[in-house]
Amino acid sequence: MRAHDWSASPLGLPATWHGHIEDTASTGTLTALAVARNELPGRRVVVCSEHAHSSVEKACRILELELRRTPVDAAFRIRPDLLELEGACAVVATVGTTSTTSIDPVAEIAARKGDVWLHVDAAYAGSAWVCPELRFSAAGVEQADSLVVNPHKWLLVPMDCSALWTARPDAFRDAFSLVPEYLRSADDAVSLSELAIP
Image (cartoon, rainbow, N blue to C red; front, side, top):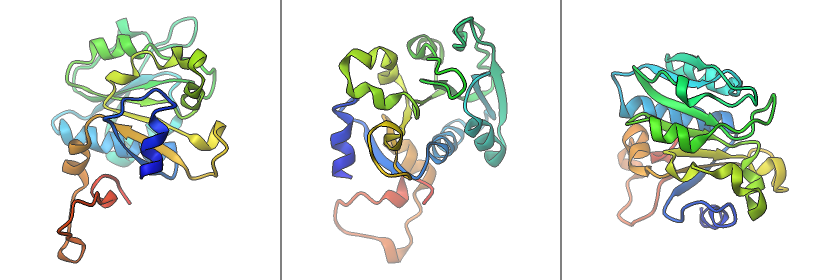
């Protein structure tokens, strides 16, 4: 976990964010959307771009959430002016779509989201942020509730290393914490079982 915390700095992420490793970005997105559903239980919609990764749709199927796709502009970026967030628990912005490598305008989405959970899927392009000259694609990411980046794509890390960060670790605990007596601890150790599906 300490090495994961260190990895936030070269990517330019807030030092206060909690991070942990998931096996894939798909699992990270599933985890984040489960937290969003728990935070806003009366809302059952997830909003994303027409070009969002298929993992968003799969997570919605698993979590029994409705997926609402938003049209894109000529550069294949989600159009914030067309975001329909009524009934939404989450909106997913993509930094580096698989089909076109487009970068959704995260800052504009954040400005419009209200209390809706903002998850950023930067699985493909987030690793590029280690180069300061490529951090333009991270604009607005600091306003996200959760973020996933895949070090196994560009950072020479083995497969099954997907980094998930959140500005709201207590929301993850609210969604996943279930501590039976045999796992209770008197120390201040962070138990990852309280923050994710595994």
